Length: 313
Length: 257
Image 1 (cartoon, rainbow over the protein chains, first blue to last red):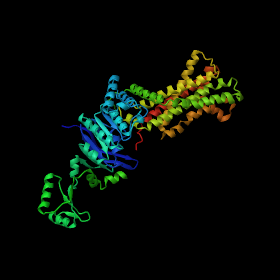
Image 2 (cartoon, chains in turn purple, brown):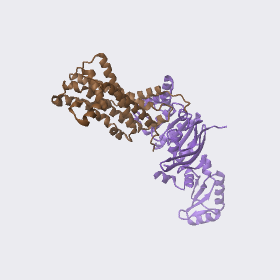
Image 3 (spheres, rainbow over the protein chains, first blue to last red):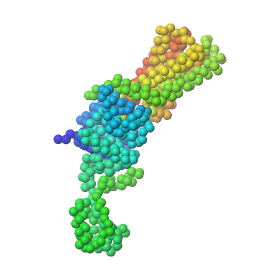
Image 4 (spheres, chains in turn purple, brown):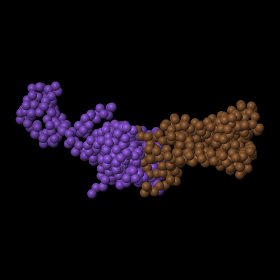
């Protein structure tokens, strides 16, 4: 039987008269990565702030690592680690001093604390920067230090609020590797992101948050099945060929682009069957692309808005 | 209800070490707080002092006031430091850790008290170079040091509370201004009996004057009267209010975006 590391029912929170979270239910099994996906302003950070005991919920039952956030916040704090959207490192301390400060505040014995700091600095490849003040580190290095600090106390549950926001692609991939490695050690992670590919690559389960409500929840594959959208797009060189193909396959053509979209489940066998039918009818195809639904399609279908436009808003 | 053990002393010690590192990296905060008191010391002694008639040598008269100015400017720096600190992300990290919450302001207070006292020692050193020769006995010295430490602890807690009440670090500078300015509205540079009416009443009774008169008596042998008890009372009261207020403000839900 799997135990839930995070269990939330009926979470509500308003700031003034603005209802930011409007009845959220979540269950995150221990040892998994759960992603909260949503555009800016959806309530992701507010959720993390409440689950990590930073602010109080207006209503709802919340248990993290088996402890009630409302009744025993200190027990929750002892079990969690938080890496927020905004860097939570002490800028005037060096990387090593930041790590040792964490070890002291986690009440590790002195020797063990020093060893843990050294171990994590090596693990996160911060060795060269260990004696530089945090203020002088690059964005990617600060984020790594931030996460390393979170791990000093060996938390059972880790909250990562947009851990790769603002990072260059290389640092982002490095961060993904680190996050995957954490779960291998049995840690539970709640990750918020507005990057659909990030949730797709990392998460065991995803909840889509929009306007303070969860509009969908499931594995990445389950979510993708919520939207039709898988198709093969065929491209032709002339309108006559397109017409023939439209008749032969009974699909809707696009005369302007000389393309035809055929619904498909994306499997090789169905692709081969389609090509065989085109061969049988002697219709030359200029090119084809296979389009499998991604989370962008899910997001668009669920919220009625385009995530790319959302990010620009 | 808390089932997790807490370690307020260990947490506060870690925060004090953190603050000392900050001061070590930014020593200008210590010296910055000393610039105005020392300039005023020189100005009053060499420019205005000759016109002052206070019954004794003017340098001897104003030393306690300079100590108060050094304390006031010192805690002004503390207020800005505390407010800047809570505006940074690392404080929210501390809030999500199983540590004693009061350890954060306590770290600021302990480190600031030590820094401010170091500033006062430097300022006193300058007065000695200028010719100040206190005639205090060892017991009077101990009492004077006790009075100074008590005052600095009291106004540092108050400054930290004011800083936590301020919406921004810039505002904290303004909120702490009374602590920086009140020593000027005291018997630091002129005796209260040269003033009249409400001004005189205010100057005689405000905490800085009470502490100044106590120190003046201890260091140069003037009459102390009931000033010492009033001074101690003021300081204990201010320290208590500052501590309780700061603790309540720090436990308040943080402003989040």
